[in-house]
Length: 110
Image (cartoon, rainbow, N blue to C red; front, top):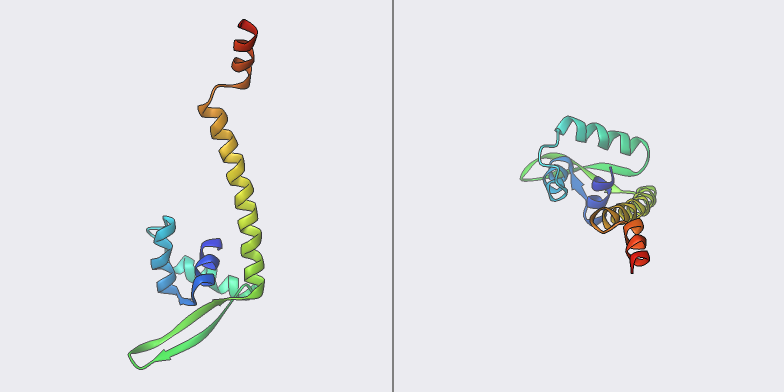
């Protein structure tokens, strides 16, 4: 959902295009059925809205747009992911560096 919202924040889009753009986030093999069920649920929750777009060059397509509620939801996700990233950064600093205990032991040995 956050990837869809972020993509829609940049430009209105239709389902197939959302699947194509999701590859930038590492989603290589997204199931179309899952995507469209997710979009319908997001629309039901009011975080996206859709309308039919017709063009002379092809069939009608359902275009999706992020709503104000979707913007707020995306902001919530971004804040949560920032905290998660800080936690992971701390973990890997501790994992790849020397532990605090071994540093304290080195100071005592000096």
